[in-house]
Structure formats: structure tokens, C-alpha cells
Length: 188
Length: 188
DNA sequence: GACAAAGTTTACCGATCTGTACACTTATGG
DNA sequence: CCATAAGTGTACAGATCGGTAAACTTTGTC
Image (cartoon, rainbow over all chains, first blue to last red; front, side, top):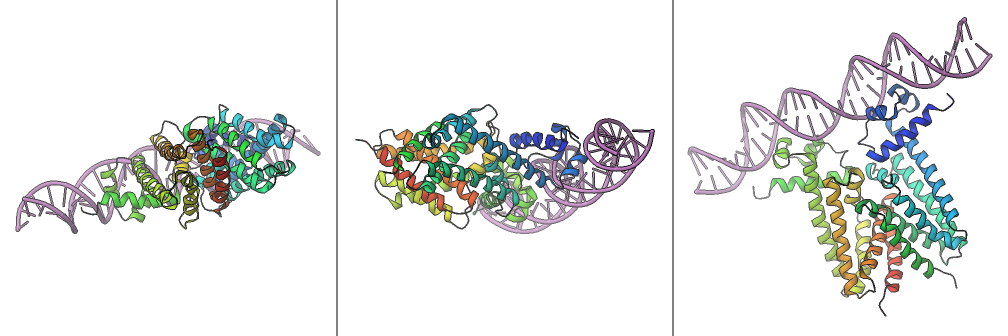
């Protein structure tokens, strides 16, 4: 089993769940779309929910890797990187396969705050917040935590609004707003 | 049929869909929780989706009524009302039965942009945006449309972040950010 | 008090849901 | 070459899905 079948399953399931939703995707559809037998799926994961958790782990890893790398490619000073967050956001939102934030959709479908799927989604958002907060700290903002939280509000708002309206312009407006907030949060 | 059974159905179904989600709520659960027979439901609505649309219409009407009225109660100048948007938002988010925005959850479960449920949810958001835009115009902002869109980003961000983290503080941070943006968008 | 509209109960349809059992095939490593 | 692990196909269980049929009861109106 060199090119691990389990990883292949999680990768393919990610696409289907992302495209069609969690409750709307049955195991039989996953069999048809991933090409992996149901027996094999239930050998790797005891339940559908466990599989969803694995999918979310992969998504978190991929997205954070891509996002942080992209931000650091686009700009090289902490302050410029705070703005680059919104350039990367715009790239993501306008990419052809964008279908919203998988974690926002996950908490929409699994609302119980004690549900592991809900918890894991919240953790993803917290880690992204921490990243932006380190940028804000390095940029010597007056209150880095507050600035980071405000910028994240703009980011989440741009994501859901883009899905709602079906176009990527909210990311641009978010960047404009971010510019003002960063300016105002400047030290000295 | 004075206290219309249809309206009672929609009111009760609203609570269940809001609490448990759309796909996760079956018609049998609705029978059990609303106390209305399935035959009766299907006499008023041809499909489950049609019922969801009626539920969303009620939600839109109720929410916009409450929200705009509340904003206008809290403040009486256009400019103060732009900020009062976030006070009303905070009241909503910290209210005991808050479980996120029903329309964001609806588009999360019905992702197809041509789905009537998706379209109707987007319409709700557009109407709220229009309301804020009229406030921004009355407040003589330099670019009322742009300011309104930015404030709405903060609002949507505060909603989803509150659901994610399970507390209402994002509404307060959104208000702080809004203060800065409104100040910066001032004419003269 | 008759009549019609509205609502209920119960049972059911075929499809789909998550998850399992079992017998079979493939691939890998010593 | 053989033992073992990994994967497959098929069939199925039991529950639930959205939606329907038919006979019965309640309700409001003239």
C-alpha cells in the first residue's frame, strides 16, 4: 500500500463533501465518486462522522499551509502582510472551485457546540486568528489581539457574502476596510 | 380557521429548522414537534422545499422588522444609527435562543446558486444591505454604498464568529471596527 | 342542523440512509 | 511460493427519507 488508499479516500471525499455538503452526501455517493469500496471505508473509519473529521483535518492542514505561505509570498513586512491576508483571500474566493468555507458550512450542519465536528471547525478558525495576531504583533499594532480579531471579522464576512452574492468583490471591500483599520491601529 | 393552521405550522417549523438544520429535520420530526399532521402539511405545501421557503419568508419578515425597529429605537440620528446596527446585532447574538443566521445556514445547505432557497437567502441579505445603505446615505458618508458594504462585512463576520466561538463578543469588536470605518468615511 | 372545508389518523410506497456480513481477489514481504 | 494484509463486490439489515391514499373527525357558516 504505497500510495495509501486511506489518504486517497480522504482526498476524494473532501471534494465531494465540499461540493455537495455533509448531510446531502451519502456513503453510496462516496463509493461512486471516490472509487473506493464501502467495506474499505468502514475499515478505515468507524463512522461517517469520523471520516468527516479526517476530511476536516486535511482541509485545515492544506488551507493553512497554502494561506500562510501565500501571505508571506505576497508581502515581506509584517504590516504589508496584514493587508496581503486580503489579497490571498481574494485569490481563494475568486478561484474557480471556491464554494465557501468548509468550516463555516460544517458548523452550519453540526450546530451542537459539543459535536467534535463543531469543535474542530472552531479550532481551525482559532489557529488562523492566532496567525493573524502574530502578524499584528510583529507589525507593532497598538492592540494586536483586537486588530487581528477585527480583521478576521472582515475576512469571515467577505467569505459568506461572496457565497451569498456569487462574486468575489467582498474581498476587495474587506481589504479597503482593513486598510483603514490597520492605519487606525498604528502605534505612535 | 381563525388562528390559521398554516401559519402555526410555519411558525413551529421555523423553530425546528433553525435549531436542527434543514436536511437534518425530517417531515416526521416536524409532525412530532409541530403537532400538525403530515397530510395537513402536504395540503399547504407541495414539497419540503416549498415549506422551507415559507419558513424563510417568515424569518425574513420577522428579523428585518425587529432589526430595523430596534436600530431606530436605539438611536435617532442617521450616523448614530449606523452604530446602533451593532448594538442591535449584539442584542440578537447574545439572546438566549441565538443559533446563528438562518440564511447563512440555508446557503450552506443549499449551495446551488440557482436553488430558490439560495436565491431567497441572498435576497434577504441584499435587503438588509439596502437598509444600511440608506442609513449611510442619510449620514452623508462620502461613499454610502461602500461604507454600507463594509459594515455588513463586519456584521456577517460577527455572526459566524459568534457561532464558531460560542460567545457574543465579536459583535462588540465589530462595533469598535465600525466606529473607525464610519469616522473615516465621514464627509469633509 | 345540514354541508363543506379543514384537519386527523393510520398505513403505506419506493428510495435512500448508515452500517455490516461474507466470500472473493489482489498485492506485498519473507 | 506462501502467508498475510488490504481491498473488492454484493447483498442485506433496520431505520429513516419525502410523499401519498383513504377513511374519519372536527370546525365554521348559512
